[in-house]
Length: 575
Image 1: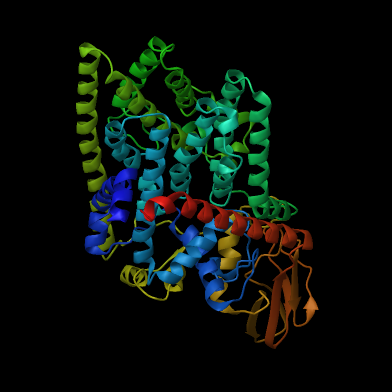
Image 2 (image 1 turned 135 degrees about the vertical axis):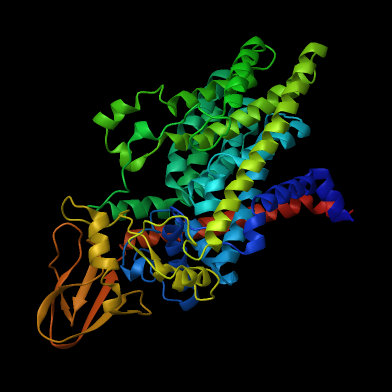
């Protein structure tokens, strides 16, 4: 009874039921027909997590060198791209029988993280529960969340974390600096660093905006600066492995992710639907009304105005901003930032929460304004039903593709895909999680070592993916990767692995230093008979120290948070 009372008191149970119901509706067809959706980023991230899964399963650890995933090519990814999150997913894979179960569980976990974060943000800005719950489905239906269900895009996890960070940023405005936490924002930002680098960079300017307002507003500025400084210090300590990993990697010349034209990947105002690429006509109308309401009520609620001003981000995500100029003069942004539409991970939580705040404020007004609130609520509810139907149809179509023996997957432009699509479908339900990764192989260039400008996608496919099966791969207990092959004659060959500056490659006991032009793949002398090559990444001592500092700091942090939580709720549970 005490636990039930606790849930009721915190509105946790109601929130849990609503989020669960929304997620079940969104995954209904997938669960009913046991469908697994494969699209843009599926194979990329599944390879990442499979590599960690195998490390945990076998005990053959290698923090930098990928020995199990990505055709056992030895490339670096997890060390610089969400390392903490990769290990959590590897651990989750140990508990999941197959990729289907993993995909369903992670979808629910994503929505719980996002849903509770959005409600926490609404509570922070004093939104009434009714309006928070009304706009919650719209938050979970929009932006990048559907892309995790359909194709495992990691930006969705960045979007799920954004409300938590924005809520802590708002504390700079609404809380007296003396009451600000010394560590909470630092911990949350470190969590983001362990998940998705770009989300971290995008949140920086938003937090700076809130910090500047807080600095101007509050008198005890020194306390504010001090607490921000301590949070930054905690963030650094908890993110040393990410920072160090990037330093290690960028001692190499590396290939960048696929570049796309910024001006072609902007937010459009061209549909009643809303998504990554479309900001609904209805939302445009609501945004205009929001700006008017925020200006009109500036004196009575400055927070509403201050959050509304951040909605100018929508101009930055659209064609109004001169992205063609950046395409021409700053082409590197095409590989790093890639798409202005990524800003929707900030836009949607800000927009929906501030609309909810305005509805809460309207409920206290006179009849005419209260009537406007009722109309907006009705329209939002109808719009939400329409969006549910859109997402339902989308998942239905994806499920039909999965059940089609000639399709099974939605994305069919990888480097290699098995002609037997039924085999692919079976592999997604197989306990052998590597089976799917050998039947569907993408050729992503991210973080590959190169020695001169090259088409890394083509080279990786040609030298790694196409030749992988010609060699026997074995991972050794010390974290090195061993390749064996039998040659009919003495000849020079290219091994299907990549080598970084910190890597040591021994071929038949001798160190090899010859590489093909472009992608840094080794050219070796193969003798007649059995040949053995051993690839090992030498981790710098300074990084090992940084890694252990990070691990120890996380253990202390989690232990402290658990202790604080138990101590806080102990009097209630002992009643």
